[in-house]
Length: 266
Image 1 (cartoon, rainbow, N blue to C red):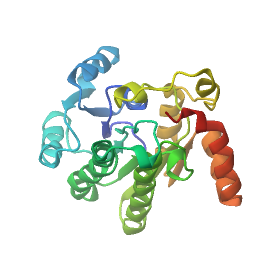
Image 2 (cartoon, one colour; image 1 turned 180 degrees about the horizontal axis):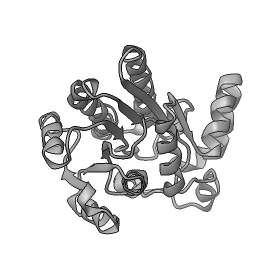
Image 3 (cartoon, helix red, strand yellow; image 1 turned 135 degrees about the vertical axis):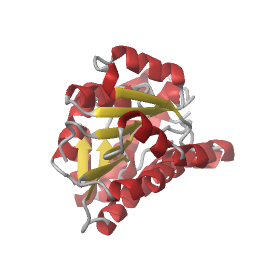
């Protein structure tokens, strides 16, 4: 699906990959509904946008099912019926082993990453099926196919999003709705701060970080993948390589990432 002249809904549009997707979509002549829980972040995105007439912002908590169910009508009123949805909004967990992770933190990550995505799918899919051409894209993660120490629940939610998206692809194969699962590797965003999580400050933890992709490059890769109707969109060299390695040698790849990332544990 080419995005030009299409109405595209982007969650997490107030920062990081989501913000850059909003800006890149506008550059490609799409109309964009930017969704984020923080209205001030959406205002900052709007200030950066060169095409205010093709942008509408919506301060919505995607964990609130009723609020999300009201969103399609609000988007239609502002921009027209949605042609595509890109679910970017997500948070990470505190950098602790599952044994030490509080239930409040577990539920928060599950509610945002998994239920938030489900709410958006359930709210928008009935309308997308009726469009001449449409697309649904959900951001999973490299952590959705490769375990990261101290991010077990985050990885579990992102693995669920990956399979949810693949299930949608199977169910919608004979329809006009394309489907993509997006697997970013390390991208230089503010997800740690936006998740209310402190990054371990030790030098070894800093050194363990994998090479990062810029949000601007990530946005271009994602939109190119959607326009090419790809089922799996891997963002970053790390994601592409580790996907292949995890398939060929799952145990060895787990040992590799554990050695690289274990110092992130609090």
